[in-house]
Length: 296
Image 1 (cartoon, rainbow, N blue to C red):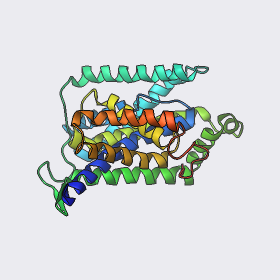
Image 2: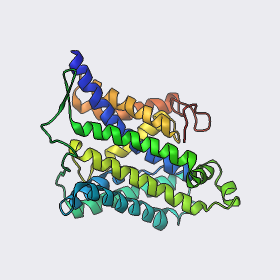
Image 3: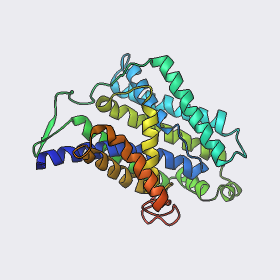
Image 4: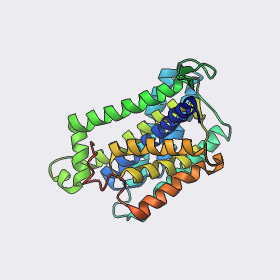
């Protein structure tokens, strides 16, 4: 395998891995605030891409993406307010079933709104035939957008959770919801905000990756599985570790194509999930409380 081909696989892997990492971060934000595994997280990514595409036909790209993020964030808030908040004493299994049901509901609504046609936003810069030459590897400018936006999301979340009162309140709610409530923190608002942030982050990811992967009403299920595998691999609740785990999974998937048929690529995420759950259920970086890499 030539160095240029290795580099090509590397950039492809970290691009895909970045999307997985963003989905996993969405899982972790909600899990930290509520203890819920939100299996509708992948649908937020789908909604971001689909809504951005629809709006881009009537307004410039940047306002279309911004409005799509706001709409998806509203959907996330509404799901928490209408469905999750009503289940006060529900167990973990009930919550999982509810979020899976919400995922199916969103997917069916998307099917009726956008049908089965595959759609894609225009490239943010350049076009599908323009590319950058990096030591013989051809890299689309949109890849740089994906990597840059992912890095911006990670940094912005770190600053939000570390240096803002709202972020600190969310961390307090994650550590001990009852104690946070006794200290005067509105825990219901913090939980709703976690869904808003998770949905908004998913929408941003869906918009920025749409020119590369295209957007389809059923894409959320696969992303939900991959994102959950990454969250488990890094240690559920550990968002910084999720970034490393996402990049690792993306690289493993991409380089596996050089060894196995492409049809087996998706099986890698499931296989890794099974192995981690059996060998190290707390993830590669330990439990949420003990994880050395935890930053927020």
